[in-house]
Image 1: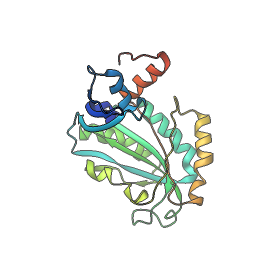
Image 2: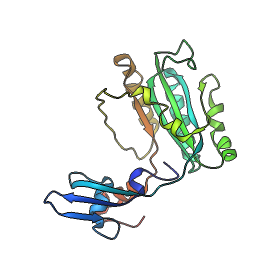
Image 3: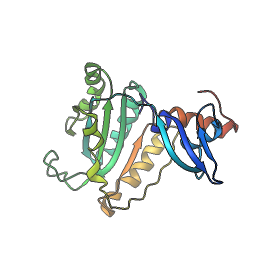
Image 4: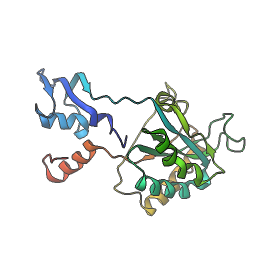
Length: 228
């Protein structure tokens, strides 16, 4: 995400039918306001019949997750904040409150219990990638370490079991300018206990470095698009 951006950052063109039945092509030069809106500025502008995306070749990555007891949540979130502040653009990380799976790689004392995980993905040179993830692997050696070289598709499916098809999940999200100590305290207070209500609950925090998000924020403040 940090290196190549979000999906909306890589949208080159959209073909759509508007609410009044008009067929349009929206990109940076044709209907730029609509193109901005389609990338996250709003909704209900029409039905998109074709997307054109910029693709990036990604094969093997240095990726995976580390897993810790939920009692380490606040300390782990502070480490997550510090590492994302200094990490190279090739390294994307997210933080998750979840229920530890009943899997062979999870200690028996942690299986089925509330836990926290830091998921990472380094897309770039493998030697530099090993160096970039070393602080995560060394932060708490008592945690479960599943970080290493793997196909990108393996990383994509790593957390699928936590949100299986057919669960009719309900998601909510919010943006923070900064992961402050107060935010960490609030997130930890509410997220640490959610696994006791449902083992399928998750709370995920990640740093978004998106060109489209930055442009949307600038526009919301000024009322007009600004250069990236």
